[in-house]
Image (tube, rainbow, N blue to C red; front, side, top):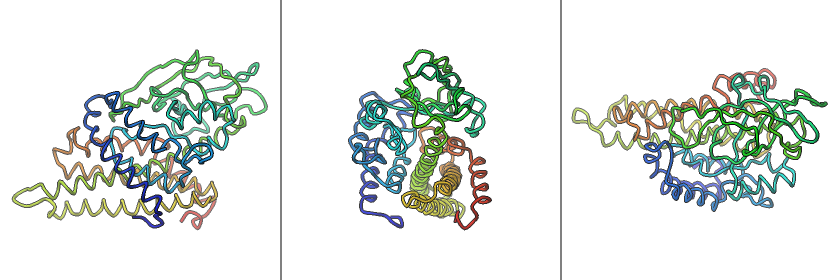
Length: 391
């Protein structure tokens, strides 16, 4: 239970926890041993359950076919989903509120509604070889308006879930017109001519969702596939970053909870020199620190969610989303390290949840902005807006 817990949020917590425990967690080891993949019927079952629950539209208004949940409720859900390894919780695509607010009727009909129904899947083509966390300054991909079509040229790295997607959200700089050099966001169908898969790098974690590298060579898209105005691209990306940073924090809390539970259970059973290791003070110290840090992280996470729901100034909210992404990802990594240590040799086995989370959680300190970038965002907000607005 958390401060501000509502009846609706508690119901969602119980419902999603049951889904994770009964349907997802039992398939973790199978996924680990099969490159992240599940039998097709099981994968479909998970997707069908998520769609029936309405998870693809958890933040979308009811009039558009969504659940219209608060950010607090959404992160209650993502916390529970974070308790499973191998990205098995990525069994659905999630539409975000900025899509509902800025999509045209054509875009809603062809992209938003299919996302909500599970008929299409999306991926984000933002990062590039030289850009990393510097999205604003280092994007080289261009979009040139010619005869009513945009011509896209460039290379995108780490396009997560591209192997399962039907279309890209692609960020590019405008090459011509009055908004030259401004950022725009486009919907790009994956099947279009000129889109080339360059590489599918292998990563430390074992996910069926790949992080692909694509080249876009004179890819022609109609002008009705630009989202909003030509110079709106960074605003949508920032909105996506805020949402994803909250989501990462929530999943890190779920992961930490699972790790503490499993490590505690093991410590109660494991004996060394005739004594249960739970009675060793150094084991108690690791568990106590983990519980305390998780509790503190949850308080911060859900307070920021409430500020989001109360429509706090977006610039302050942007810094606070960086704060919780930084704090939660660092916390979860510490908890995972302690859990591996408590399990000992068992904690280094791939079939052990601690070993998998030890690998998987490392990425949370990197993607959607590294810990170092989050610190820069927080410090700059401190300089501009003062301490009183951040605490």
